[in-house]
Image 1 (cartoon, helix red, strand yellow):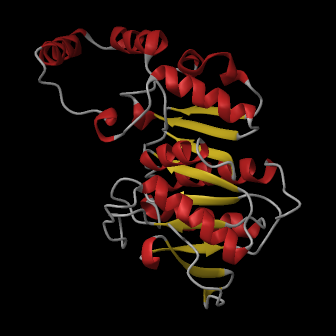
Image 2 (cartoon, helix red, strand yellow; image 1 turned 60 degrees about the vertical axis):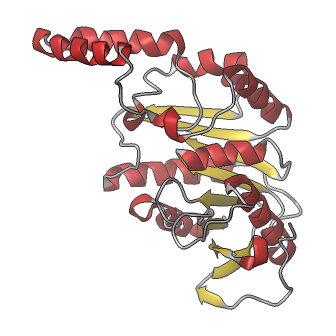
Length: 280
């Protein structure tokens, strides 16, 4: 798939913002914010049913914050989400690689950070494992595997409940044992096996990829304890290139303004510290 459409300048839509067309026949598009700089450009794919502006305009707000720091962002809809058409021949990973090609060819971007919330985190992970231009990954409620620390934290929470709540929990447990439980986050996401994820994690670090991993309280079906992360990914999880936060007081989509501001500042601080490329 040839992502380069033409070499004509793109008309600006706002100060330091341009529309960028990419992908098969230029049917995908997004907004590139910020002036050229030496650091990575942050790609923010849409996630779930959320359009490129992000939940509660999170991506747009983050783009404006990073632009003030001289950091570029690209927010875009993956095929079948927001304004993007369904493209059977192009999935989220392929669309993101096409976006990298276009941003490199026409806008001078050389290195990239990719990721976001939920399935957007998965896209960042997948692209980083196949494209060496990705030097950083943003994982907000991203890949993690349960294990003993998850069940330890879950048991502690159960013990804190009043006896009348235990009966409710027991009824839910019987339903799960009969196979009547509702869907959880893994039913909507495609992850590698635990062993494959460990190998991919170690390979990214061997390539000097930086990771910001933030888990929220809205991800309780998958993450409940900070030590769960090291169990999932081994000693590599302690690498200084990995930044891990657990924010149980935050919602999965950062519904509250204070939560969004906290997240934006954390991402801005992380992006500001990423290695800068002489090639820009």
